[in-house]
Length: 179
Ligand SMILES: [Zn+2]
Ligand SMILES: [Zn+2]
Image (tube, rainbow, N blue to C red; front, side, top):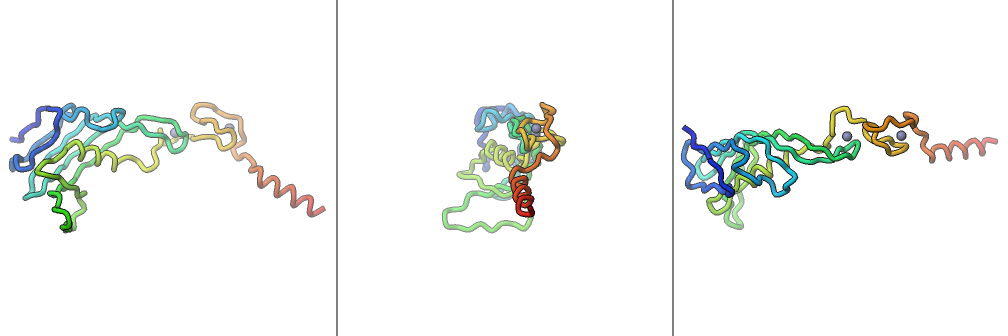
């Protein structure tokens, strides 16, 4: 049997209170408001929080909708972000101590004063999962280099390759020198 977290505005988990079987969190409303930016939306989550010695493992998945700007057409759009969470949280070391990290490729983070801030974990993992170059859609046609119009919206009449004016000037000069 896994204990289920049943909603509160606080999402601080006392690490020393974690039972061996861990804690499952699957209600996105339990974290409401989940993100510091109110335009971000937590759609679903399914996380297992398990103690491992003094460490805590947070594993599972998070689905969120985050406003992004398309890298091609510069339009804002809601990006759906699927996050696989696999984080090991260590007790924050006393200042000056160095931390020896394990060889596994889990993300490593820290908790402080016996308190695990689940919201912070969810926000950090979601931020890390955001696309480097967001696209409003795979086949976004972007902006026309000649008229600057959004080619998804306006079928513009510009030639596929508009002549570069600098190149035209050079060609002009070359012609004049030859004569
Ligand atoms: Zn786009
Ligand atoms: Zn154009």
